[in-house]
Image: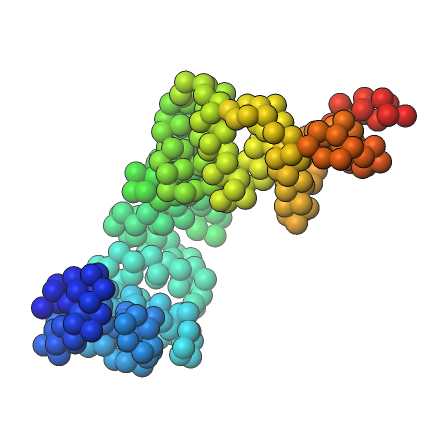
Length: 340
């Protein structure tokens, strides 16, 4: 009955689906109770009702469903539509962990590390994090790898690049996007292992396909430079566009501008080059990172100097060249000499 109700919901037969889930819930089907609770929590197919949601989750908990414990923990941790109660969330996480729930281990790590609902205890935090790693929780691999990457004195963890890569790669194999990005970077730079552009590209591509903007930028670089994959400007441009347009990766926005400026992997289009250089500068200003984008200032300056894709404006060009020079662009100095 639960599965049939679930199928009706997927097929947009809402009234029949909710009716079957309710009947299954009344018969103490714990999965139906959790699914129905989720509907009441978010207002899916029924009127939003956090108290009804909690009631159903408690019934599912009593029927042995440990996922219900995790959901109850999230409700009291977030404090949405109900008073926040970290101590109550801690108790639900503790019970979930005692039943071997992988996310219970991870939540208990967070609780002890941050002092949420319990006194801060780094030793217990590390123990639960290790349990979560053993249970193959992707986020646990990421967290542990980040500690090992930098070292964590409070946890007694020493910096170890080889160990960090091992943990990132395990997380990457489970599909964690941050682990995919980090694993690609480690192989690309030869950190903790021999440099391997092919592996770097493969991990970056998997992350890129999961819409990780940094991975998309890495893939573009591999295609542009021909490292780990055959050089291909068209593919490079495509991935730069994904990283820049969708994720606003600053380096990608600048590279898109350069592709349009020089006609790399796409038709030359100075008006679009102007747009992307301008976007790069504006977003970099918001992030207080202008000093890293001297080339955008310089190339945009040349557009204003010569009227490429924009109305010619020598005053504007000089302003851009001056800024580029301040950020270390040597060509900007030559341009300013030329415009004296």
